[in-house]
Length: 326
Image (tube, rainbow, N blue to C red; front, side, top):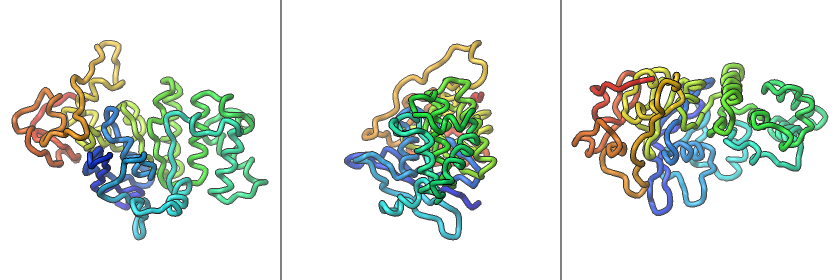
């Protein structure tokens, strides 16, 4: 395995030493995809922002490594200065987020913003950028791409804006695309189209994808592997289809109950009772134990990651519990 992205033993702390992300490790190969899934505050977004080098003030990487690019000379992102990040972002690493309108300049046309990216990141001369931009907009599935080129962000729908933002993100031909809740605000039909676009980019451009979502159904659409986050830790990680079909951690099972998988018209939607622990008050044992129907006294002791059925699971009873999949 020669991954495009390798995150090893990542720790991210907030304020006075409160760990918001603890001992997170995963890797993505060229053309591969990993989904980070979990409730709000589980640490998945902080993990992807650590990868992008855009952690908010007062939050910092306090342990572990993040390497971009394969052997023999990967780049350690945790050691980059501002000049180093300027060389990486937009060229080798790009991102799209939940609200595309907030990441586009409302006073400039979409085409001008895309053409500028092509000029800066790909080195195209000004006379060539319009044709290249229109071609790229068409590749993103936008109808009448020449017209979209001349439109302002407020003239486009949410789905069109997200496609335009993805075009800007891939204009520099990056190795890795980070998509943080990129389809959350879209209706179901448009969401499916954007997910299909992300899948197409992986297959045709060899793009590695790191997708962040609270919904296992979204991850199931485009990701080969999934890492389930709870209270700052990965509690289960493995091939997406296998994790969904036969979860090994009770929290993964709980997420499946509330996800938009399957025919929910015949079932009552459920919620996960209770709340995750606060960052400064993590229990010594399993962090999910207080909300888990399968908890025993053993769960009050520290829980290492174990390997069960070709996946990693942070549960004392992972090998013996009979849990329900999708």
